[in-house]
Image (cartoon, rainbow, N blue to C red; front, side, top):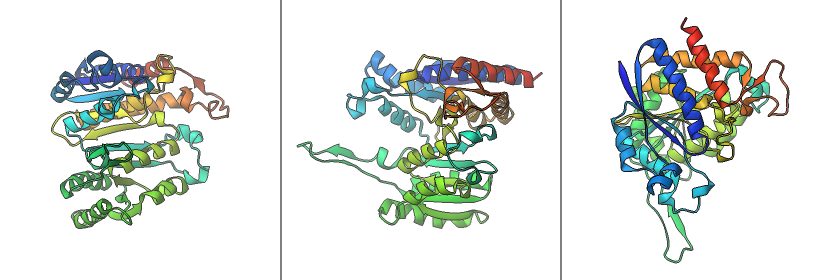
Length: 366
């Protein structure tokens, strides 16, 4: 079987980590005897420099006809002075909308080998952490009406949701909870926001269709506190676009490093979009420093959700775990970076970490 993958290296460390993830995908394809054809789609600041816009029509067309899309990161201070509609991040919003991917799955998993990287007290994370944030991706304040007054003294961004938008996201969340610990927490600000009250009403109306699920609700400010006070209470968290963006980043640091967290954007009629949740970090671009594991784990999600190749996806995740067992650490997850010194740790760069995952993939297949 042959699959087409569009790659969007993007900006900053994006090209560094995507290159490594592609090498891992090529290794897993050899092991499981399927074919992958890669084609690059410019987006973000790199596309602005070449084409004058953050998402050229040709890039979106390539992504739409592909089986899946693997994205690195976009943005950087070089383009910060551009109007909002012309900044690299506008390309990110446009591709999500263009592909129709409305559900963003952000698993926050603490690898046991990295428990020491967790900033919380050990008893709070004893037994590990595995939280899935299901974030609505194509609605809410990021896509609502926005503007500035003619005199420039006021501005607005509108949070707006419809019942169908909420329902389709919650179907994904309820179904995910059924496959996990059967607990779903809907995070909102229903004491203040009318849109949040609609989220609650919709969730309660849907709940009888999943009788085995324990449904709860939490205000977003309390959820932010509870993630550091008692993170193990959470299993699946469903929330709006902006709240999900913020809470999933917080959850990533609770698990040790944002450099370890993958994401999958799914649900549309076209290809799924897979990317690490970290930013472009232009200050370390091209220095062989960035941690590629979040992008590699995003590639595993790509295999699982878009290509339906579960054994291959699991093999990548097992290879990452094996590499961590061996003591290899990029700078963001090294104990010395965090003020400690763990015996047996071996500092490596982006390329060496990727090569180690490739070897682990190959050796496990012998």
